[in-house]
Length: 312
Image 1 (cartoon, one colour):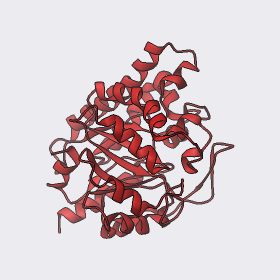
Image 2: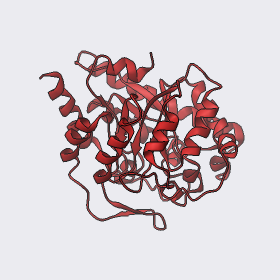
Image 3: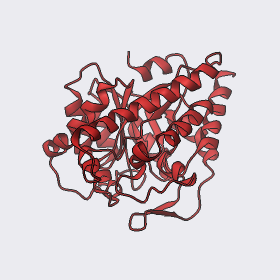
Image 4: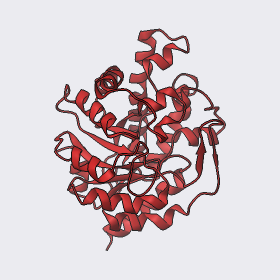
């Protein structure tokens, strides 16, 4: 039984974490860099741990590591050796696990599952740092994408996270590529979360219905869903996914603001996140959290909704 299946066998909903990159920026850390949040792995690791502890304290059953934009080539471009870069990627899991253990020592008596750690695997577009995770505008083949992801995934798995979060993926073939690599570790499980441009399609133009259908038979895949997508599209996307799979649906949208890849800034106004949580649950989502521009208050809202379901 994978960890998601284990938790959902005992609880009606799994509470995910919220943003890391935009949250550390809110707290004064400069993320305007090709490494984005991964820069904090060597400049401010204590800030990552502080945010993770707060997320766990607010009720998150899981946090995703600060490895979304962490790659060997990315760190080497900053002057780190190969071995130093590898250590930073492993360290991302260690920080999350330490935060989990510290928080759980305070909350183990509560009616909630023991939290877990997800190893974040962001898309090739995140490494390019040009916003292409929101366009899918890269032409690598499935094999080339698998080769790109292989070393980082192996390093993350060395630290034995409970699950892998393959996230903000704009292209079906990239999701398939990472899962191709995951076959080398048959005991590992993962979810795939696509970035989407509307209520039917991924950012790269794949049908979400067809993508979920293509991934459904993968035995290592514990959940399929959506992240870093505008909240207003998510209900429709959930309904597309549940048509073709019985796997749990995972959703962690952004705040609804618009991202400017050139200036690496967010514009517009945020949605009232709380309004959506019940809608997503009723549409079929069973893992709910937040992505860019969401934070601790949003976790509290999801955790409170889960509590209301338990107490019914």
